[in-house]
Image (cartoon, rainbow, N blue to C red; front, side, top):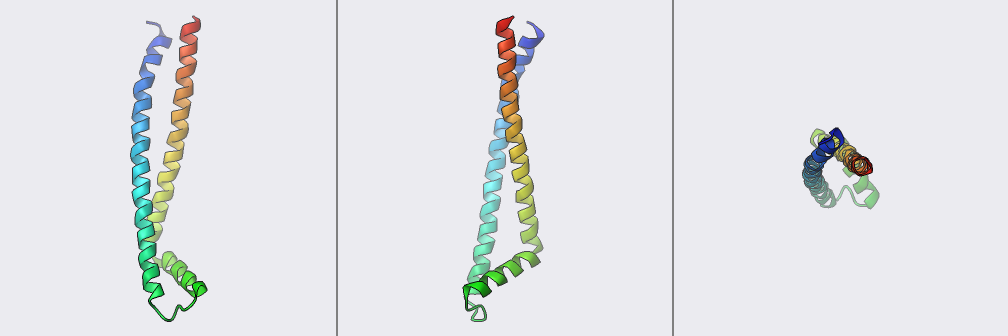
Length: 111
């Protein structure tokens, strides 16, 4: 077996591992987004029940104030942003691995 063939044989496992990792990342991101939306809905429910925030503009301003003053919320948003960046980078890496696999396959068949 040539080096090209040996390298080509390693790609399916690498690709599968990365695909599974991306799948898990997607699930974590979705769950985290849902938690953030739940927190926002809870806050809006509290705000809507308060007569002090009688119009949409006041309610939006209060929600933004609560978002900016909640360390848990800000940490959650930061975590999701980091997870999404990793997800995107791993997706690019997966595409690169697929391209490399096709290139090695072409080299093996042309020799």
